[in-house]
Length: 502
Image (cartoon, rainbow, N blue to C red; front, side):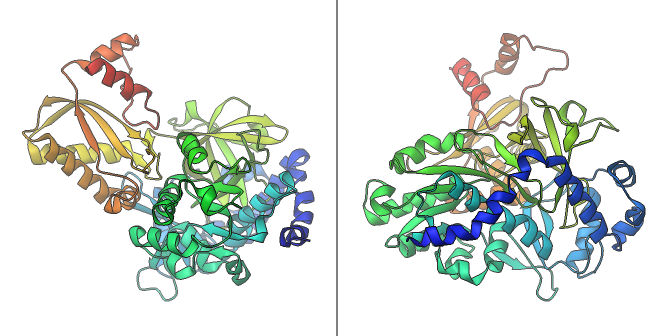
């Protein structure tokens, strides 16, 4: 009997429990809400928002406001300085560093012990449980798991408290038994220099029996490219013939799908999407033939949703899971055992089914580029352009930007189409200043740009005069309230502009 067959017994009970997601969803969520409220009733936040007298969802929604990071930032900062019982009972040691907001370069999301176990690790466990259920002939545990991780650093001067990428936090706290089947070694996994890390990962794993890989598609593709460079092989299947699945998440997989098929030509290769973020683990692809993901309902996460057409209203409609409609775009609101209360995370989803609750990620609540995990928002773009203009004397009339996705050598960049009212004397210097400023104000963009490993220097294309107006006119959107899309993960707009600019 294979090791996987024996290990599968560990997941069998959970596989049966997951059936409740298909017929008992609202009850599961109601249990989560009451559990979270009861656990946090004696915290400062719980006392101030009447948790002890909150008996139902209507009272919870009445007593607790919808929050963005700005509303919770001061409380989180106090927790980072060692204060207890603020947003969640006790002290919180770990903080996941995420892309910034309008006012900050980075966000620091609390990751409590309960959050680690009942959200993030629960999601990882269920990923395997669902995969094994769908693939009974799997030999997953008969080899090693290549898991990409980030790095972490001290949190202020508070003893034993750290900040870092969520992946680094998970690896730092993982059950020691998991290290027996994981590669590379922990020291390599937590290196902060990705150029060094990528090389070491390739060298440490190239002769291992790797059966599964996990990580962000853009970062993983860069590692796999290095594996091929060192091995001299033409594809990954020649290096790891037993590789059978890629658990991926973080950015949309669609732009990378064809490249992965080419680099891993094995007919036995599977791909499973996961929706895990610094704030929580939200969804899993339970059916390999359906791109929609199953919303995970019995973790320490209570969900609410705001219709996107109301997101900018002073008092938008907020509904629990039972109130959503299929085919409608919602901003997701979460309450978790990490102390995030009615927290608007910025992601948008559309439900494809209510029985069970399955959804697709539709984007962010604002224009953005997140093709490689850089989370570039319009506010970043505006500040970067303002700085480049100030330094060069240029004036920007219109602009849009989109990603150039990776080629077969894992090269990628952002491409900007800019119409200047006053051109800079040196367009290359303008581009350099813009790129430099974006790194300064956005930590995720800075990380992806590090040594040009994943994201290369941005490109600026000068638009001819009146190009954007002509494009808007061709769309019947000239004048009025219509606006040029500033940032997009799709290349549709910029490709049309490039064609018109010829």
